[in-house]
Amino acid sequence: MTEKPTMIAFQDVHKYYGDYHALRGITATIKAGEFFSLLGPSGCGKTTLLRTIAGFEGISSGAVMIDGRNMAGVPANQRPTNMVFQSYAIFPHLTVGENVGFGLRRAGLTKDALAARVGEALDMVGLKGYGARAAHALSGGQRQRVALARALILKPKVLLLDEPLSALDKKMREQMQVELIRLQRQVGITFILVTHDQEEALVMSDRIAVMFEGEIAQLADPETLYRRPNSRKVADFIGTMNFLPASILSETGGKLEVEAQGFGKVTLEAEQAPGAASGEGAAVGFRPETLTILFEGQTATDRESMATIEEVVYYGDMTYYDVRLDGTEKPIRISMRNVFGRPVLDIGARTRVAWSPGALVLFR
Amino acid sequence: MMKGGWFKVYAIGYLVFLYAPIIILPMFAFNDATVIAFPLTGFSTRWFSAMLEQPTLSLAVKNSLFIAVTSAVLATTLGVFAARASTRYRFPMKAGLMGLIMLPLVLPEIIVAVSLLVVLLGLGVSLSLWTVILGHVLICTPFTIAILSSAFQSLDQSLEEAAYDLGESAASTFRLIILPLVMPGIISSLLISFTISLDEFIIAFFLAGTEPTLPVFIFSQFRFPSAVPVIMALGTVLVCLSIILLTIAEYFRRRGIAKSGGKDTGGFL
Ligand SMILES: Nc1ncnc2c1ncn2[C@@H]1O[C@H](COP(=O)(O)OP(=O)(O)O)[C@@H](O)[C@H]1O
Ligand SMILES: [Mg+2]
Image (cartoon, rainbow over all chains, first blue to last red; front, side):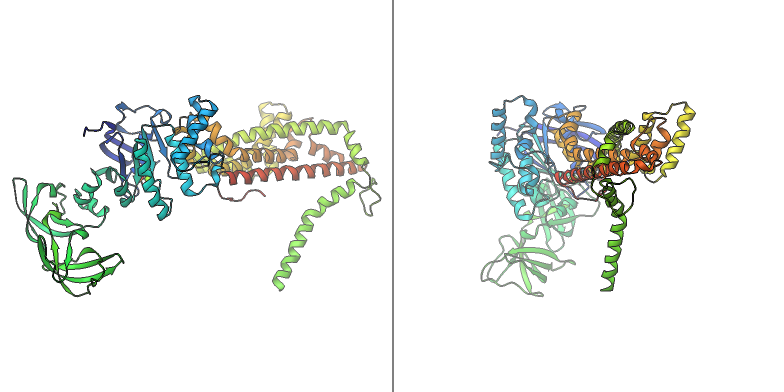
């Protein structure tokens, strides 16, 4: 597979609002045809970064390149990007068709050609035949589709989406997630999505940049982000992660000898310690589903420890157990898929827990 | 239900107090007698024909229409700028500045009129219809700003950005998106300032010089008892006109809010 060319490059981008340092040295590249997400808590600068691509927000220093061209001084209406706004920004006084065709006004198309393009775009987002409807009478999901069609009809190099699904209810949101992925594959345009919803980012993206306070904390594909977060903060933001105190005994030839509470001595590969030292003291982290409670007659494939069950939360398809491994002070969470006929364990029960050193992540 | 009973009495009393004079106006306008007194003597439209034959009256109407139209256009133009600035841009001392602009709303009109007169005479400006227009723009602008601010405020800023993002220039965005969406507000603002200016007396009286305006003319006619029924006829026409204009203004204001999908936060009606 050949490496995809770079579509967007941020080079040490800083942005100040007055005294407030909103973007603190963003350096990253986004590849052509990629579904890229900017993920982070509210106020971390995702929208600001997206708007520097669109050209709505100037930058204080650094450079934003789109398709190899420095965007300094290029106004929003001349950039090869289009945006789907959080509020959708559907023009309420126009029809659906006029909204979708708005960007083609200047293309000098004949009436028929314009109508054909609009029809095509509406078809693509599943709104065939809606062209003559009044835009202000649409539902939230339909507005979103109109906004998508309106932006995609111009065939931009990059489509920018600012929390496009946050106004929809859960069911609609999940449906639109799938449709957006399908749409992106179909048109092959680079999509950049802003979201504060980690699940949404994991589901939809090829790669994700996790942002905190104006900085990119980690940029990786969803699986790496989930399995090998490079800091406790990223690990906490994406899903649930357990931490237990650990100390590094030795580090030789890319292998780490670690003594971890509850696990004893383990040997970890270098890639299991992706982060730099944080000053919080070393700890091993692991996801709730990487540990397994062993029932009668089951044996561990790798390693096992003894534990006491302290809390049981039953979710129907899943049960969450808060268990304390022998020799540790605080409980950790284990999630188990429920199997028909297998009992849910009680609080206070003693149990064996299977685990594998490969699932651990070391934070220094 | 004592409480409800008293409220009913109050409400009816209030309505009578408010509208009885307005009902009396057409009564005597169509009454076939020179004296304004009951009982009514018979139906006649002669006061309306007499009204149409008054040469000063037609001059006064012409002057007032000119003043009202010009003031409405100028005050609304200023209102558009001020409302746009106050809803879109941040600038130092914004609250204070906006307060100052809105001040004529509560300033006694006689003070505005007298101080304008003093300033204009001091500057050596001769009184004319234009000096009246100046005064009327001054008192109408706060109203236009109030109406237009609500129109501009209910406009989502991302609509502008979306148009710009789709390739339009700032000017064409204004023309294609902002203007159509605030147009109901602009029409409503034009109509309301027109109405305010048309029946404004004090400023016109002080600043018009020798030119008659409609309210000033009406006032002067009350010296002649025989002219009073004509004034009643004129008053009837004016009341009808005002009601029609205000209704149209309110209609456009509400339509504007509905169109841009906002919530009604109250207007003048
Ligand atoms: N126009 C602005 N003026 C001043 N501060 C702003 C402006 N826009 C955003 N900010 C601030 O910059 C920070 C990042 O904002 P934003 O990019 O909208 O965050 P996010 O989209 O991640 O929630 C926030 O603290 C916000 O208050
Ligand atoms: Mg945001």
